[in-house]
Length: 164
Image (cartoon, rainbow, N blue to C red; front, top):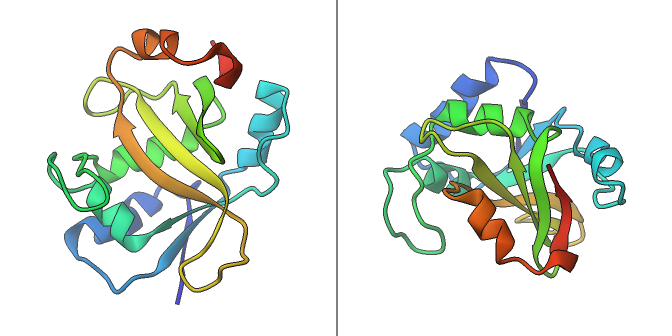
């Protein structure tokens, strides 16, 4: 069973918050109305072919746990509002760059509860938990990024697709 969250609806903050409060059985969460394909026009490059973003419930839960080390992800202490506003700000990026292979980072202009921008890492053509041929845009992680300009200076220029 999958969960669908309309990211343009402010009630989605409450729906995201539910995943912080309780570890659910593994489900894929579809964030619809993200319109991520519109980012192609901004970066002048066809990066995304599908509009929605997905994340699994465990990853979403981990993003909102108090800051610290954890299994496959670090806990980042994000609020449901941080996630909501970051996803709604993806079409206004400070930077878009390739992280590795089919993973790309988008840093929206939104400033998080940490007083820093958030880096949203998305894997293109990823698999759903139960469907290996889904070819989705999967949120791998979201985390606060301090000293963004210094970080971008260390990235290979060919990997930077857009920078404000």
